[in-house]
Image 1 (cartoon, rainbow, N blue to C red):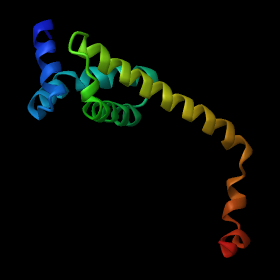
Image 2 (cartoon, rainbow, N blue to C red):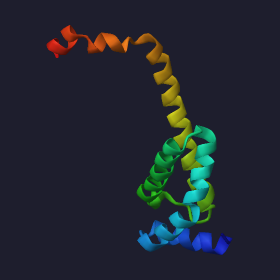
Image 3 (tube, rainbow, N blue to C red):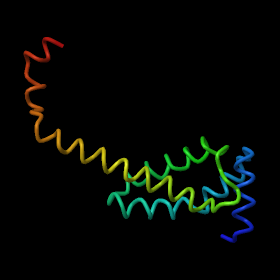
Image 4 (cartoon, one colour):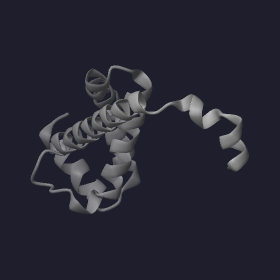
Length: 113
């Protein structure tokens, strides 16, 4: 993507142009997906993070600095989302070892619920 096109898209997206956003999405989605998959290791999680990244871009479009690289901004959002997911997985992994899931499925617990 040329710098001129990127700057133009950044300005248009910032102004709420859905067509510009869709064009940028189509140009960069596969790149973002590949990037976050390298962090996460699985396609499903990478797809979720990639989708979330573009949703965040749209939600934060007012904060786009058109003098900066839009692509770098999106990759930063994607990286932060991937790292956040990895941290969540790490926390859940620590708790899974301590939780006896069978205890929650016992009839007495089910009856009390």
